[in-house]
Image (cartoon, rainbow, N blue to C red):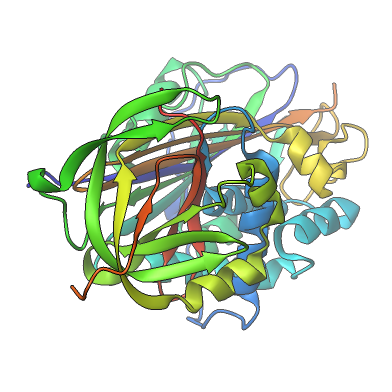
Length: 413
């Protein structure tokens, strides 16, 4: 049986300063010069999973596409922006904390993300997380703060590299990404512009098969009723399920992956409710409660095979969520990350790309987030659920209930 790989290429931070040249250097890796400090293993703060659930739902509500299929990876966005937040201070940091965690202090955020990463990657090895920092070797213009790098190494287990940021660096970065995603992502950048001074990259692999895979006899043809009024004949997967949920008028189910550490969740809004209206009604607390309090009820579920690729620029949505100062070229405060002789640095763009494929064996999913920082310049069946019209779906961790992916299917043309 072919292994289903789910990968999350989560983070690329691009730090840019105008007018930097591209020097040549011999030394590539600085990791050996930065000794990781021991981080005491702790449990999640009592409120962290609720805080994360709120961020996940608010991100989905602000990032999804109202006209097309879309999927986001909240854990990717949080990790990316949290790493950046370690370089922020003042009002810039306060806004980032408010958007990410409703004001949780950055040290506590680092600790909780450290624990979350450890938790998600231990046990059955369904997930693996890797981080790296790539620095342009231009010390006379760019000074990366030692404390910032130490935090990246300690809490994010990042490898640290110093390179000339030439074509060889492009190859090195892409090879690192390819290795850490088990070949599923073969490259992330095509070239490096002269004003780029740093990349912070995170890669995650997620390997998940269904607890009970579908057989050929479970695959049937059915009609999917698209949001635009058209109809599409698709292959649906039929299964007997028992974890039934109701949430804000929707009906759905929880379907376990192998070893039951992670699950897939589907939510079918009422037929008379637009999916946009349903998504905007969602909130983290009530969603977590619904997932925790599912009903044991036997029913038949029909789910279409589907795949989705999605790309969005997050600058405007993040500003709307309250993260405004980080994008202000004159007032952003990232001096704790690095300083440049060229002037102030700020976030220019935040790019988010995702991919998901759901079939009879399991799920393959991936995401990439790029933050660009620039210089100023078996019981009796009682019913059935048929996902034959627009629906919302999630991939969750069963112990904490935190959503790892959230998406919606509008059309299957």
